[in-house]
Length: 396
Image 1: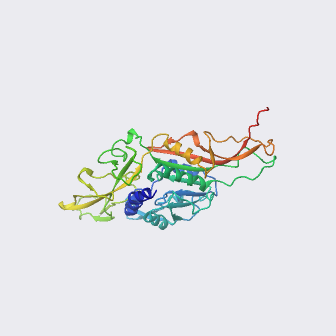
Image 2: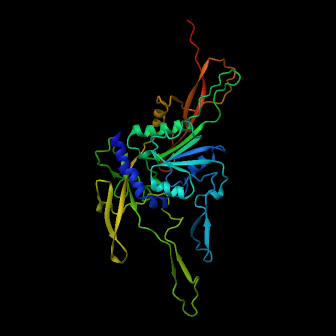
Image 3: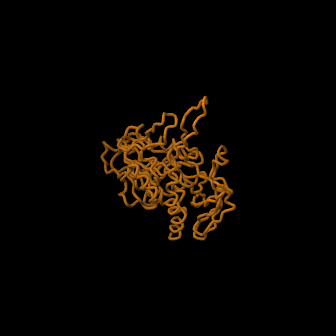
């Protein structure tokens, strides 16, 4: 266990702290399936984002008033600055409270500066909150960073316990129903080993080779499954600045569209948004013992500039693997749940007599299994208490 935590500290936590600002720059657009899931949650829900990063989902329908941020200059206007809320809060009615948790201090600082409520902690251990504190939870692109199956199962188990509602105490015949209110829901997504053919080129960071995944040769990684346990490089981009360039004075009689040209180097329309910056000629770079790559490339004016590339650990999930881990987590003795293939039906069982059944924690997957979300496997987990009739013993 100590080797697992040491490996993750070196190849996950410290890496995200080192690249926090650059990473955050490419993480501001919400994935539609995540935003739709959050939008479907009932009003007044308390929601945990386990592995929140820079907090891009924490603004979804948030009741917290988030300050607007000044965007890049509007080059279509007449020299005016356009004001927009990069958190998307101004387009949505506030009706949910989302709390973020992450291990990266750098990313948490970015989230907190945007007005979000965040806590530093490890998804492996959510005991900082009482069981059942949250109504619902999400964990997006996080669990694949745990370096062993046992730790991945533990992370899922912690999510279930965090949203597990209190066990019903009602046993009177007039109020017992087959299920207790609405289920608590969890959305989990992880990177897939399988690739989307439409992204098999430069848009896919899962592609093996010099510009994609890198095999791991590290004895501190206890479980190392070929193809699935890999490093994914992150090229640390140089700081970007916004500059204004004045056009040369026009010649007499020459027509120009504008007397001033604006060049925006870093803006919200960056086409690399939510894509992994790919390394440059990794075969020419050397990896040190800490998983950091160093090298040089040509800079402006024929000079050289240092390129830092950090290797992040990922476990790429095969189809069916995430569903299997949810089952293992559900049936763990601390969860004491029952994994069911389909959610319990909302049938009225008020005619059941006292003592002929018991409450069971039912854990099921929406649709019965994980689903494909553009090079990610995703599951929606339902957690609810269900009244289960006891099968009468056959007469001797």
